[in-house]
Image (tube, rainbow, N blue to C red):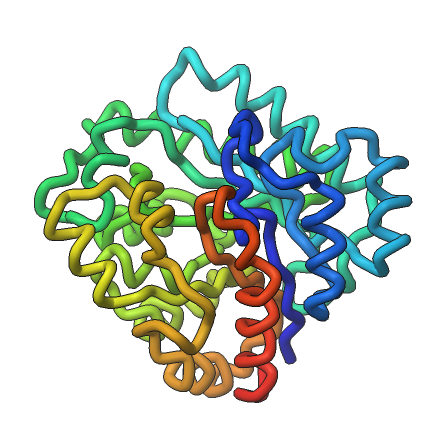
Length: 304
């Protein structure tokens, strides 16, 4: 059994300071119009920070929250106090807002933990042979920081932390996913694998989902336009520029084999929440409603 949500990044909302972002009311209105019952919080500060205001808006649109996201530099010691503060804010909001229904071993809400903020890694997204790896000390600091954030989320707020490998971050490629799964035990944090980011890293989504099915608490679904992907990788284009060029597309219109993904999930009787995402430039927001509608329709036709 699966439930399907969406996220503000499908409307181009990744950086809350971007002057081109759509109104938050447009995002939640179109999410409901497209047929979704739940939404991610998106970057802190985009949706209302006051849980009472947010709850009222969600209830008006018959929506709930499935997750919040910590998307920042999780390596630098100088940035970590900011990440701790943000963890408290996000988790407090999640625990005091309308939450998605329980499904799977670990129920919502989730705190999706993504490292991003190293300019060199962002520059070499999808290019494993060129992307510099963290030193041993820097990697250990990343692990320690993730474990501390996870402890805050679980112990103080009962929000389930899930680690999300991400294109252009310091947890992206096969060796890094394997290492983070070894270094952070499942009782401390689960995994949120993302089909689009696995593909971007040169990995088979269905094979890596199967490999970590017992650690998989939450899923993100994307699709990737192969022709655009090949061009941006050949040019060495950074990830968000690639998104602005349309490297992400509606589900079923790209190169990811969702029949194989579904077969993998069914063979293990996996149950849980799946969030569809389609990162894009917010100046292209006019296409969001049609795209998120097409993605949901595609999954429903497949039997998700």
